[in-house]
Length: 287
Ligand SMILES: Nc1nc(=O)c2c([nH]1)NC[C@@H]1CN(c3ccc(C(=O)N[C@@H](CCC(=O)O)C(=O)O)cc3)C=[N+]21
Image 1: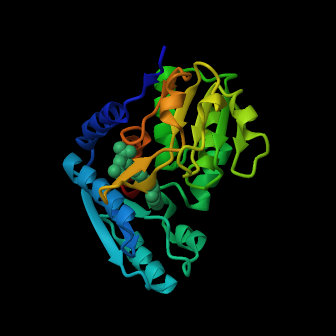
Image 2: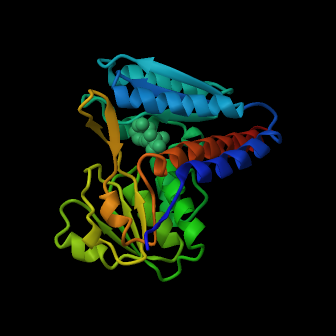
Image 3: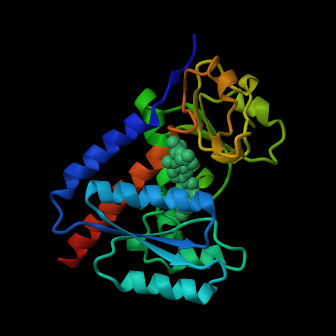
């Protein structure tokens, strides 16, 4: 028997429909600003799809572009301007940033109330404490996909591969909050395949195509693939590849996300959800 393939598009649509119904109850359309430094082609595509989805929903989306060689001070000034604007509810600084910019300082500059990426230390700390927070969109989307298969995670063994601030760490915190037993691993973890084989839920967020092989997977596990590695095709185009060897894993897992059309669309849908959440909280506070 092959795994249930988790359709990220279909699940994203459910989130988007819910967001759309909440928009009616807001005094004005929420505004989302995406800050893009440089012209990395993959980032251009992601930013475009974020802004397009925002506009489709009736949010106001705008892109703030800065050149590759923009200074940290330029970037901080841009963020300050967005913080001060009343019509902007969400600010997302597209990662990765150029090496000459201190990403943590940039994250710290975003008003925590507008931090729809959940990367400000205040939001990360609130998540860690189990307090209400803006939570990074990708792990939020992953948790939703997992709970569509298994609503109660109490006592489940979840293994997370990856320890980034944007996916691995918040993913582990969310799973812990759901009362799963969480093992956090990363590329330096020894005996990683053996650890993964014990996972009822396996989330891989490394960015190494095909890392997770079929024999790393426990039969019937839920496998969530966050990896998006761009691989050049013979015709010169690109395809995106996940961290999981899909053809192998699909034979063993109980449920699995494909790449593309798995976690990616959920990330964008959860960004819309976070933007509306931020807008509602700001509207309530400013009243
Ligand atoms: N501050 C910040 N926040 C992010 O959330 C963030 C970021 N920086 N930097 C880059 C990563 C990557 N990311 C994706 C979002 C959607 C798809 C997505 O929709 N992918 C489509 C395929 C698109 C394609 O062909 O590449 C899919 O999986 O079906 C992928 C990747 C968000 N990121």
